[in-house]
Image (cartoon, rainbow over all chains, first blue to last red; front, side, top):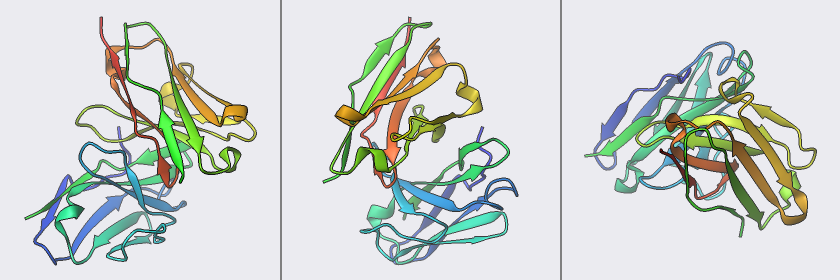
Length: 110
Length: 112
């Protein structure tokens, strides 16, 4: 059972901005950094954002991350059809002494 | 280029064990921790544990304590994840990951 809560779905038209939230607690997001992963249908997850707001090489700057308190957010600006995927947040949990993932958000491009 | 190549799909009976391999290339194997993550069909991602390929140190999710073992062979840059006492709920795709690099996934099916 995931301890990080995300909305099950989000959607937007091409060019719009979409934001996905990730709600946790003081033992995970509140005290550790957040990563975001993109999973296209039928493929392995891909690291999209690390350390709250850093993009690995090759990730477009349309993707941005932020963190405040015990919540984090992923924003996709200039939404494109290829952004249609599942998105997961993740953070280390000090109480569980393990990595926890969010429940996942399916982004649909209308 | 950096690659993590996993072993092929497995079909196991309940109670059996499975060992999935993850061969790294294109980088220094001992430089990055390896995490194992699984995903049941239509479900989210579930972290199983991590291993430091240099020291061999491991950390397992509480849910899998006593059932999972993560090891490595540094001479062939390969990490292994063994899960025992398999049950139907263990049917899933298993991934190894050394962020930002992920393996392609290994489907493990547990069925009588």
